[in-house]
Image 1 (spheres, one colour):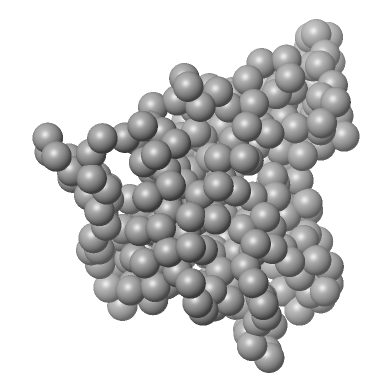
Image 2 (cartoon, one colour):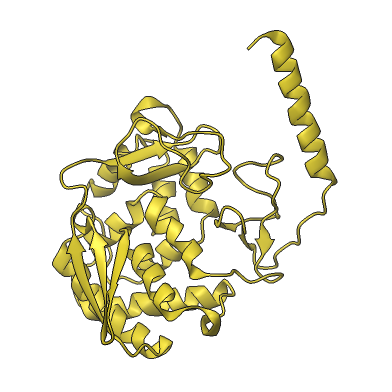
Length: 296
């Protein structure tokens, strides 16, 4: 890009920013709870400003008190695309009372929905259960439905969970969710392995500073949150550099559903070195105590 092109681009960006600054401001949330109708992310923030594309995002995060979130489907992005660190912690620290633990986790999830102003009576029961499964397991989930039963099929669950453990946990969750959501169908669980031995991809976006984990490993991927609008391609973490503050920020502004899950586990403790191992997979060697605090 020559100097004239650079100047034109800078002028264009400045015009866009000036136009954005002229738009109406967003409402402040008394609870610091916000969501975005476009990228379908949820945030804990001090003010209604996109924390990843500050000054350049056309949208303002919406205060949940001003307009309630539309569907629990948006929550699935946490489980599908964010680093699977919380799920792997849960798979390690849950060691007993699996059905009862599952019931407790389902209660926490439903309480979380109420706090974030989801109107359960207006949510599709099947969608609500599916969103819980994806949040908890970190796995893509399909459904097989007939007149009597709904079977949720977890994809590549063995990369995160012992399959018998998560099956027993979700059995306890299903019993509670069926009652609260008035689901008449029997709920079951099955598994299928799609990736096999292939590595799951870990990615970093140099523009917004987010970390992602999903799908088969590639050198670059399309943004999983804004595939139609984002002009930047996250790269595999081995192809780029970042600092631990990126993960700290992501955990800080992401709703604390995983911290609630983790804190509910009796006698929770990570084996010596396990957390360090999980973070080193993401090239995180600093601020580990701070990251632990965000999750535990």
